[in-house]
Length: 75
Image (tube, rainbow, N blue to C red):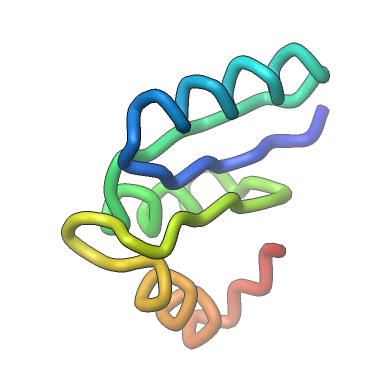
């Protein structure tokens, strides 16, 4: 089963995405801020990351930049 990491600080959006993705058969892990999301990439090893741009602690662009610098190319 594929695992998707949703990094989104809006609870309603995160909840809706999680509900619909799980209904479609995916395993979903969520994070409410960029720092937590960044850390979860390495511990959860998702197959796909849905990343918001405007996040607390670390914005989405910085999360993406740091992941690519660490040679993580998860789509």
